[in-house]
Amino acid sequence: MQLRYPPSAFRFPFLAGALALLTALPACDSGSKNRMPSQPANIQPSRVGVWATPPLDTDANGYVDTVEITVYVSADQHPVPLSVPGTFTFRLIGRDKKDLATWHIDEPAAQAAMRRSRVGPGYFFTLNVKDVATDEIDAQSAELAAEFTPRTGKPVQAPLTGLRFGRTRPK
Image (tube, rainbow, N blue to C red):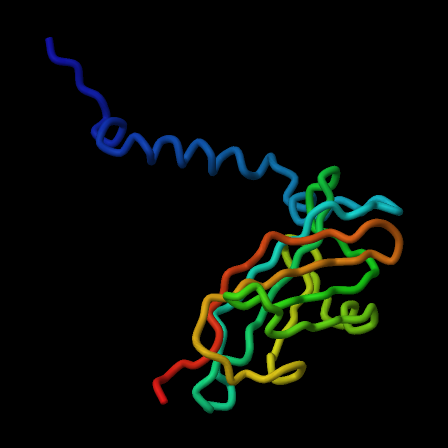
């Protein structure tokens, strides 16, 4: 005697699992999945993360001058990024460990740069070397150091972010 099973049960086992999941979805509370947990009052940040785009030569003079960054401030005891009043300092450190550029972002400018996203509040900055120094440097690996200083509490540093700055084409 030969047993016959519906052909789709064995040819497409993932389909059966997907259908089971789809039927369970209406039981989920779809309204709660988009709600961010509320931020505790007086929370102290413990981490800063920086994400950077590749630097650009915005004035086409042959030297990289601008990088766009996104910064998230967070705390170990809270699952999403924080919105905390404070200031930022960014330093572009060259190959000889000298500062090539330093940007100080005051509290009103930091607040103006804050945007809410799906993951929580983040700060979006455009850092242009020519605003604080010269862009005419030799091509080199550089590191972007970031520090957030909350209005109350201790400053928090981000891990260094590697970038390429300087000349983009031969003389």
